[in-house]
Image (cartoon, rainbow, N blue to C red; front, side, top):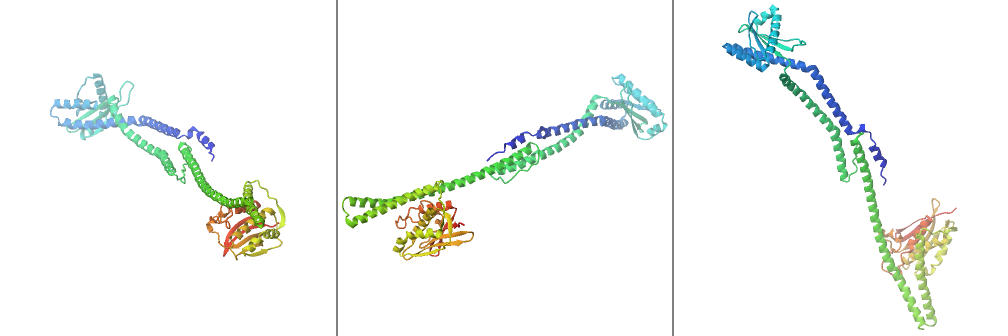
Length: 510
């Protein structure tokens, strides 16, 4: 499994303007710029108006409260106390005008210069107002309040003047206050900024929600995908289409999920293959043990016979015809052991992958007829009904000796497993697609279905009894399989109604 290293390099090379940190900085910077700019703009455009309006309202409310208390005062001393209290609490100057338009009295403070300025301003306002007889008449007849702001001069403070008619005592009360005092301005600014910062808090909450939606929501999705990965569920993918760290994290997570899924699948397949290999190895070891037992049994008997008869001949026990008979037995058993060794050498050579077939053109029925002749004696001795069905014009291109070896093994197995008065049938039939079927069929015991595939394995024997008549070494069919595979022929075995059929399919030669 190869990792895509380029994937990580591309992610690392992202531009800084695509970074979420950069985005947060930009957003925060813009918010503060807007905040400061708005603050400055609002202060520039509206603070003075707000301050004057607040000051005006406070002065009007104060003078109305003063008027109520003033009208209730019984003595002149009490009136003077009320005037002082008003002036101290409102940072203003009180002046009272009688019905004839003259100042009734005014209280002086420690700041004589400021008092004179305020008195002069009051006089100017009174003078301008008295010139309008209509206003003065209204002020004398109705409880009415008028407020004016003096225009700012280069050498004077800007002031606010409030006048209210006091019909109860037949006079007009004036109050004048500066618009510049620091303490009053500070209090007004605090109240102003209270409302302003309420708006700022609301704005911050909105931005917090925006950040939460921009960052937390994709992170929750990534966490959900990562949780499923932790449970080895790699079906979930995280699709976040963004070109920042969160988008890169999503892509990396998907990449990791795909690689883990691939690695886990490969590991599972490797485990299954390993288990199969172990199982095959166990089966092979079992077959080897059975093979060793079978070969030991096969060799033990002929070796014992050879040894016993050879000693008997040496000691002069056997004479005349008996001697020749036991010598023939020794020769037959030697051939039997030799055949076993040859079979093992053949199988080893066939499985080596270096074996070369010696192919030639010949008629298949001639090969079969030639092979059958060597089995005439055992067939007659076992009273086996031998049937032959051979088509004469089947020409093939194959290794004569090796195909003969296949037929020998099939016929040997058939004779070995066919009881007396049974039958063996050998057939050669043409098929479609330029092919021909060769099979050897015998009556007798069928092969268990679960052993159909196993009989082609080397060292495997259906009969575990060690019977010499039914035995064999378990090598013959393994040799057959390798020969037919080298030729590229199909082969197999199947049970028929009263026995077994071994077959292989050859290609015709034109």
